[in-house]
Length: 123
Image (cartoon, rainbow, N blue to C red; front, top):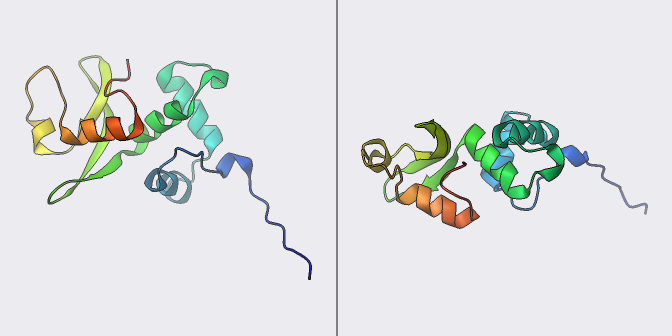
């Protein structure tokens, strides 16, 4: 019996730190390939393609699509948003929306930043 060989396009492989929700949204829904993601990451983070890291891709995916974070009663979406001239993690929970302090943050953005070891601020 001959073993079947499966061929995959390298640009559609998930990278090892890519969460399943983002991979599904990027590949299945948006039909975005790693190549396109790299270009967007390079533009957003102002880095050369060669210097991009896995964290840079993750930050770009969160910026493009948002990431679901489970709360007590709801699922909240954390994304990157431009606020006062800088990109920061944002959330659609009331604690983030109605936070008028200078530390625009909530437990969902802190949780996501800690989970993926990323900064709550891009710049």
